[in-house]
Amino acid sequence: MSSATAKPHKGMRSLPLRVGTRQSPLALWQTRHFLDIVSRFCPVLRGAKAFEEHAIATTGDRVQDRPLADIGGKGLFAKEIHEALLDRRVDFAVHSLKDLETELPPGIVLACTLKREDARDVLVVPEGTETGDAASPFGCFPAGAVIGTASLRRQAQLLAARPDLQCVTIRGNVQTRLAKIAAGEVAGSLLALAGLRRLGLEEKAAVVLDPEAMVPAAGQGIVGVTVREEDTELHELLSGIEDREAAAVSKAERGLLAALDGSCRTPIGGHARLLPDGTLHLTGLVARADGSFLLKRSVRGAAADAARIGRELGEELRADSPADIFG
Ligand SMILES: NCc1[nH]cc(CCC(=O)O)c1CC(=O)O
Image 1 (tube, rainbow, N blue to C red):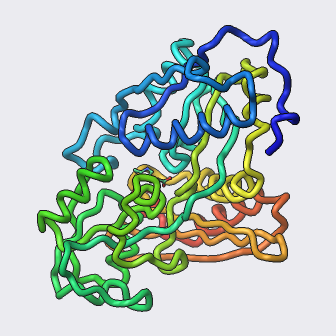
Image 2: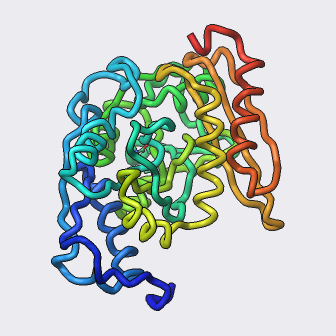
C-alpha cells in the first residue's frame, strides 16, 4: 500500500493514540501487527511515540475454571475494553473478531477488519501420539478418550463424529492449553491454527481440520478494530487499511451469527470464503452441544450481498432446528 494514499493528519489530535488490547501474548501480537500496518499506511504514525498500548484484563481472562457458557453473557472478552473506549481511556481497540459480539454497545463500531489468517481449527495431541490423516482426523483416539476444549462448537462437531469421546473444559491462553496437552492432562485438544501461527507455534498442529468437517467460528483468524462511533477521523483512517476480502467474509459470517441469535450455549459455526470467480461461499452450522443434532448448510452468492447472505442462511438454519437448540 502506498503511503501517498494516506490522508494527511496535520490537524489530528495529539499523539500517542491509545490502543486497547487484551493482555494475552496472542492479543499483544495481534495489536502490534495491527499497529505495524497502520503506521506503514500513515507516515505521521511512525515512530515509537505514536501509540500507547493499554492492556486490559477482561472477564473472559479472569475466569479460567469454567466454560465461558457458564459465566453467561456474550462479549466476555471485550466488555472491559468497550468500557475503556466509551470512557475515553483508549482511542481504539484491537480484538480477535471471533471474540467480539455481533451487536456492539451503542456508540462503538467496527472500523476495520484485517486480512484473514487461516480460519481452520487444528488437532493438537501430546508428543508421540500417532495421528490419522485429514480424512479421519479423530481416528487416533481410543474409545472414551478425553478431549479438552472450552468451545461448545468444537465439542458438538467432535462428538457428532465420535460420540464415544469425552469432552472436558480446558481454558487459559494458547500456551497454557498447550502445556496441559503436553502434560497429558487430555488425549488431545482443538485450537485455532491462526493463534498457533501468530505465536510461532504452528508445529504444534498435528492435523489441520477441513473447514467443512469442523466448521470454524465466525470471524476466526480475523483481527477487528473498534472505535467510538463519533470519532469519524479515526474511523476514516482505519477504513483505509480495511481488507476487502476479510470485510466480505466477516459480514457473511457475522450476519449468520446475528440472525441465529443463539444463546452463549448454542454451538454455532460459520465459514465464508471467496471462490476464484469472486462469488462468496458460506457454510453455516448449528448443533446440540452433545453432538446429537447437527445441521450444516452452504450457500453461494454475490460478495456484495455478504451480510444478507449470512442473515438469510442464519434464518434458514434457525427455522430448521429443534426449539431446544436456542433455549
Ligand atoms: N477464544 C480464544 C481465541 N480467540 C482467538 C483465537 C485464535 C485467533 C483467531 O481465531 O483469530 C483464540 C484461540 C483459539 O481458539 O484457539
